[in-house]
Image (cartoon, rainbow, N blue to C red; front, side):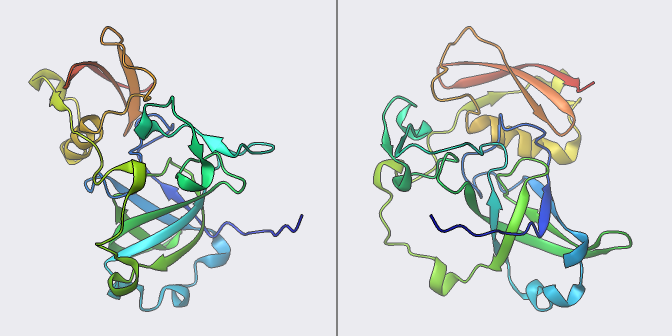
Length: 229
């Protein structure tokens, strides 16, 4: 088989130290902030000349935590409850012949860092901290937006939102600038699709905090917030 090598040009810095809790698609939680840090070889500002004129970017990245030997022609999409198999090329599953992801993010601004060179501040990213980025390209509305496109089994939207109950005593433990993002993540139901036990307490690491919660019906209740040791 033909093969090719690719170079990591940057890495994402986000509030997700693990995969659990990351939104299943980019843009679902716009309040999520992240930074794109370029590798030393690619910190030349000339490589980003003109980028500030675009509001959104495509990030092309590697599912670095999902690399496997071999592949399966079918996978079980979370949107179908994790029990129905569909063709891998009809899904956005990370378990693919080539573990490549594609995310559309909003470019908030470009900052010049004295040690890291140009840093991209973005919102709406669905990437774990440290994820390698292989390339990035500007989003072009006239070419990339297709309002008439059909969504197949994925449905027309991101799914029904949960009602989130975050007691005030626990809300105060979450930095103010992270609260909106946290509420957005929880409303999207971060549980694995195959786990729907109403008596179970789940734990999610986000922004240096371990968030404990349970779900009953359409209500998610946060029962604990503590710093990650």
